[in-house]
Length: 221
Image (tube, rainbow, N blue to C red; front, side, top):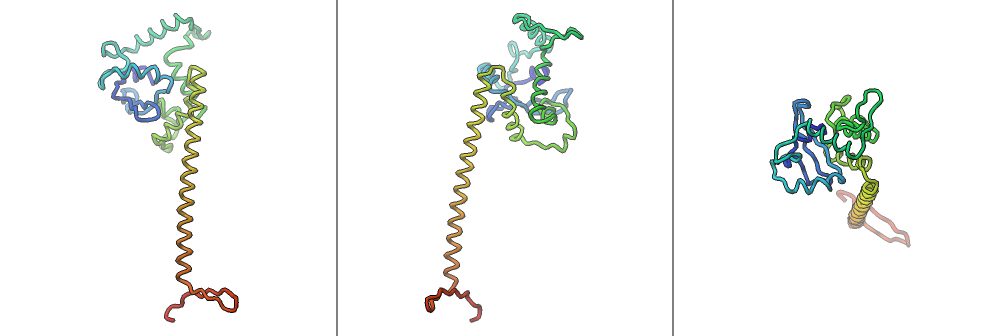
């Protein structure tokens, strides 16, 4: 999200019913349209205790329920980076390499490499090439995000846990599919058995001179 989008979020804009917290980003003057994005499991572990204390209409990132301002967020990030000695800059313009925008750019790069630019543009709120032909359901978007999520984590252990969790989910899906296939086979077997029984009842079975002869019913006999 853009800083302006993040600091305007209220608790009511978060949906906790999906596999990952879904963020319903309200429309802004710049975007003129709302969209949905997600909060990673790693970020959720830090954010959830804060959100649980809030009321529905409370801003998530606020002081005394007064939302933060863009400049104050940027200054806070700069002070934090100075404290941990992350002050590297580009030689060409002396701009810091780590800024609020660089996090957003990092996400776009990872998303585009994993799922293509249309997905990356869509989830960060840009218009992509021929987006009107690229329809995507919320379920599809979430599943693609879950595949991307390990690339967005900070700690290696979290990445490993996410990979294990994703593989476990895949195994469960495969097992569920196997069960569905088995049920279909059982239903088909019962159906085949009924068809055979019906065919036997509707035919005349005769044994003559040791030969098995089946005569189909004749209408108006």
